[in-house]
Length: 424
Ligand code: MTE
Image (cartoon, rainbow, N blue to C red):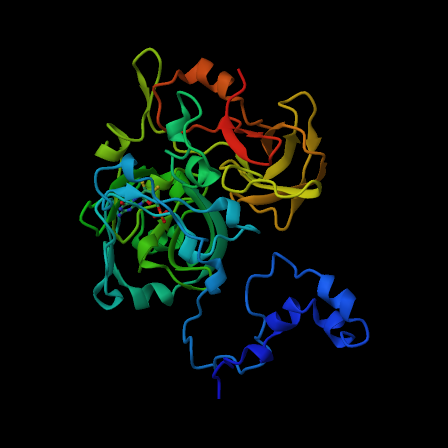
């Protein structure tokens, strides 16, 4: 019995048309007053949901967000790439609150589309300079000592379109090549210990099972430090988009190294110099030389509200929100300016502060309707301070794509709308 009543007289809207529930109750005693009372213009739905039974517990074996949240989605920028199979979409950071990115909103970057792999026939091989080459099934991996960790993954190309000036209108597009997820898996050190490293082992090569066969070299020191081989994210299995059934988690280092659909780890004594670490993911400098092996993602932050996709709606009390992260440790402090850098206030970091994880920051402020130039600036546990874009360009020029962690500016106009700008 879950049919919704069609009778207009039964729904709350008809009460509202008559001037609201309380007024309707005294209508006969004070008809004139009831006539003049206005319905709330923001109430557009029939408010009859207490008049019928809702859906049963068998409706959604796997739950979905409310239909009213249908605008909270990943988006791509169609002109960025020729094909969607070798492309990227972006996390809607302006709609994320709290440090965990919901699995269905994690940005995706595939070089040859999303592989769909049956975990029963998936294997992980460890070979090369090891005492005992090994092949693991998924069941083998799930019987090894397990760890749980929260880390951000940022693509080195995040903010890459902004090197030559303000370009894309929305933090989803300027900063949304990032997600922050709780992983479950095993430490790579555990697997390497099982295989036994030969004395001259120094580098590893991680290889994916997708059509791109994406492969990257990883220094052994990092592999033995905090690298994870993950099969779980946010309490369930990895999503296909994120490398189901197995991916590498390389905390604090550029996203390209987090090989998805991981099938092989080869141990060697030097880097492999693959495509992804020579012609791509190197940083072209003004003098024409390129920096390579720039693995770490330095401290960075962005204000997500207000921002071009999240304008200010009200004067008076408001909450400014944003995210900050550092690949070198924890975020120690985030400062915010509302006047283009003349005055800075320290924002409130809310929620967990974890190694190589995003933090959420807030600044409660009153808006009188004045134009604002808003920026955030992160400082990490090594006391590194996020640079201005101008300072970054002095060192790097404008030919780079990768590792743009410059301070972002939004212009908030008197009508509350925000725009991507730069302060010269
Ligand atoms: N691994 C494989 N096998 N194939 C890929 O295309 N893309 C890489 C990396 N791992 C990729 C991959 C890049 S460039 C990035 S930024 C991250 O995965 C993106 O991870 P995500 O899709 O979970 O956001």
